[in-house]
Image 1 (tube, one colour):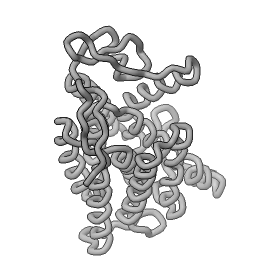
Image 2 (spheres, rainbow, N blue to C red; image 1 turned 180 degrees about the horizontal axis):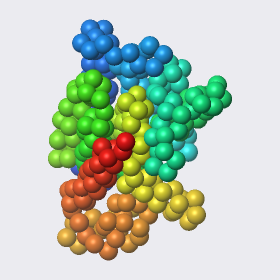
Image 3 (cartoon, one colour; image 1 turned 90 degrees about the vertical axis):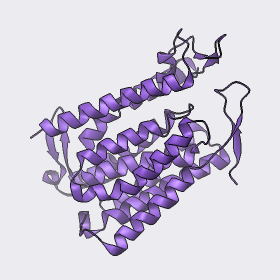
Length: 297
């Protein structure tokens, strides 16, 4: 049913079903639409628009953009700006709270600056958060589990850091993605860009709706490190990160151009070892983010 693509990081490059992230999109959107319809908990978002409906539309946007990339194999310079479109539901429906907690400047209330401040929040801050989060999540991939286990950890951390009435939105999406992560880690499936774009949009959109942008910023620091290494090497040296097989069929690199190659630099590791190490790093940054959030006034 699903197209198969080679798994380049395994000997003999076996073919694996790709694009199963569409299951996450369909299940999550159906669940959120049902929450919007039945309203088990009355939650009025910004501008009296249902947050469940907004999150569902954002996931649909993300899934479609990922599917488009899976079909057309877009160049990174084009797909880097696609998440701006996924931010449109948040902007148009005026979701998110224009009062943000920051590490260096305390709480910033954009409404204090009148219409100009609110416009800056909705038309600059929101698209920036969605674009950075989605692209960094999408860039940390290539190995079985990176595109599923790590985002699941992030999403679980955001769930714990948000209000109890909003946590309901993530119960099924998180469960579905954990199930996909189980099969992905075993090398049975790929979620493709459909899955990585959709989960990136979910993480960014939920953080904005729940007003926990500060927690998101600290949680994704390993992602930002990975993207910074990749982009610096592309722009400065016109080179890309790559892995090769050692004599014992483990993965190794002779450069440090991404988080994965930084970990495997002159150090052969199995694919699962690399994924576990990066997952631990994501879990650590998420725990620190939650700790800081709970200590903040």
